[in-house]
Length: 394
Image (cartoon, rainbow, N blue to C red; front, side, top):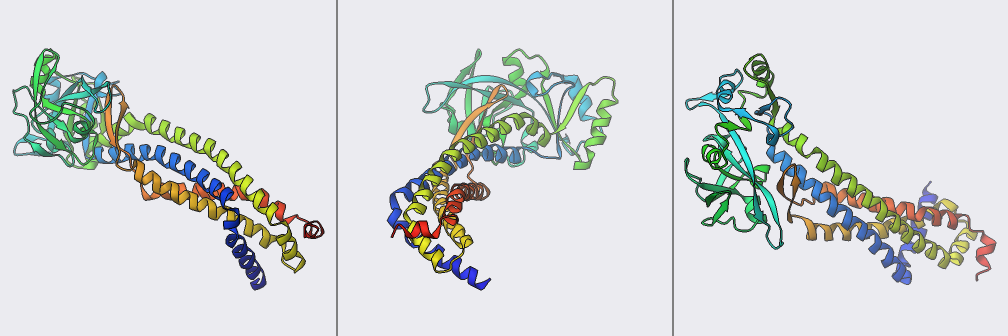
């Protein structure tokens, strides 16, 4: 066993030491793998950005109430009298101000995107007085909050960074109303940061919504109170409601989008990976061909076939690892933290690309897999190389 390890080390070290003699094809192989990892990590960092927004948005002790049969807020409708019934149900947290609840509605407004000559749909959400208490990390970072009963709005940090004209002090016309931006808010990167908020009663009047809402957020007395709250609403003949935790609601809304990005990223990675494998095959076949005499001489001196296989695979995986690391670094520099937006349902959601350590590790492991596959056939060819045939090259 020790002799086999010594042979592996000796041949592998010789192979790696001779890489500068095959510098051009080696660089081509490494660059090919780097390109694959760069694109793969870049695309999947979009998925990680979605997941980060979902993790920040969802809470298990916040319930969202919508009309039965609705898949999202846009398709829901709740009358004001029904919101009062919901607030009286068991399972809701209460304090000296009453039930922690916020009946809400939103409309979609057209806002120009920064540095792009197009506009996008952004939610203008009407919220109740306790809406901030129902978001996990809500805080005003610039300006102030809107005054109830006025045409004032506050803008999520993500929306303010992605869209133009949403700075504090700016006036905007949506519908037949002039609105003034009075503040910017942060919510720890959640979906709320993609929205614009105003007083719900003001939005109802501005868009002729009467006394209706689309959803109602409530804080549960505990995570375990969800079922009792759901049961209380289902037993009331005046209501026909669907109740979800906030976390589950956002998971449902973005599940298709996350799956699409995952499938797209995987498909791109496979297709580009095939190209990288062919590049590695070409490089390693070239390396084996240039080492024909060297390998034959080692075999004549008593070196086994398996150390030769290991040495060729080691060289291929070393080049792939180098390419994977370079691709990962470039992906981190080029993508991490870049803000973008995408359609999520009927409106735009802002998010930041997230190149996580786990994603970088996946990229490097994929690079090693490409190196292994690309070096396997050449290594087997090297092991099967006849000693007599190889020595004829001398």
